[in-house]
Image 1 (cartoon, rainbow, N blue to C red):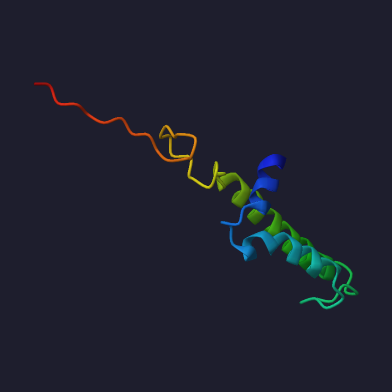
Image 2: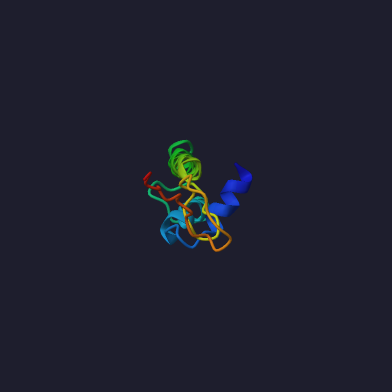
Length: 95
């Protein structure tokens, strides 16, 4: 999961907002401006915890669904040559 996460973050095909979801949740957590201020004893911390939990769940699901690409081509099960082009066998007709 850790290796796939770093591949996910470095992949240019993944949307930037998807990559930034976790970072934005952490910024919300440390920000003094919240939906419910942190000086309210329990409720102030629960909204931060909820945002962090939602972002963590989103990132885990995104990384689990992520399928890395090899040489910029999808891993679709087709045999490929050195250039990454699919090698599909040609059918020969019997005479």
